[in-house]
Length: 332
Ligand code: SF4
Image 1 (cartoon, rainbow, N blue to C red):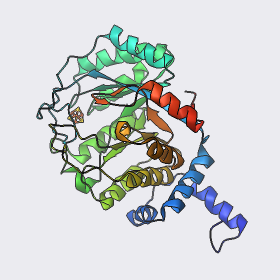
Image 2: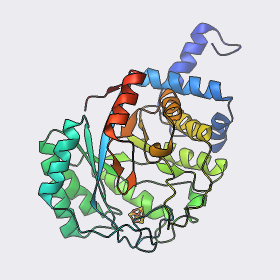
Image 3: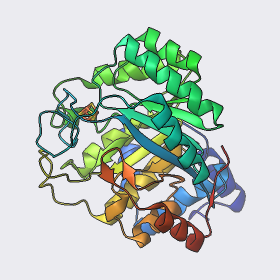
């Protein structure tokens, strides 16, 4: 019970906290980050339980359908053609190979299959190729997600017509930090693509990356911006920077694990009905940190040994961790 409140007042406050709001101020988000750790995690778990089965985890598998050679300069990304990271540029995968991977993902328990292509913005004929993949993956009974860079309104509508359920386009960080990380497209470009995806009727997967040298205030700004989107993104991936040799961020000091857990908890409270996804960076995270993230309201993971080009815990290790935590895959 919150100090100074009766039980019924506390329940009312709890119910209100579990409802989505879009008017989060930075001061409110900052105040959440500043809470004592146990209080923050308790509040996040309460909001989580009001909206979700606390033992269920949504499982997504991510496949790089077109790797490397990207003209953009995202400072964290090994797929940018500007950095020497040892990632070999590859053409778009053929349809049959993508469907083979999708079948394997389904058999391993995934409910959503995400296809990522390292493009600044796809050409219309490339969108057609991806549409064939979306149709094929959908026919396997999986939810579909794609991340292809910036889209035109017509391309977004075409993908929707093919059956695309989700489109991933991350905001990456706070507007004021973004320019330190990417110079080849603006924050406004990103927001525009998100609007086009929404207008086409596709659900939005949108989050960011922490540990890129940003301040806590930048993390506050990122969550406040995400929570200001109407509606909230249905999925909110929170990535821990994977420091890949050859990228400009390779030498960044790691973000403290508890600060990562705080970011997850604040995202859960600010976007109570979104899937908050533990994304990149799990490979270097202890099981205890991951367990704390679940306690703080994370309820989605990427599953499979690779995340685009960076390593991810193997399926067996993940399954074992889920079993030990008593967590079960969420139905699509
Ligand atoms: S994050 Fe995407 S857009 Fe940026 S360099 Fe990597 S593949 Fe290109």
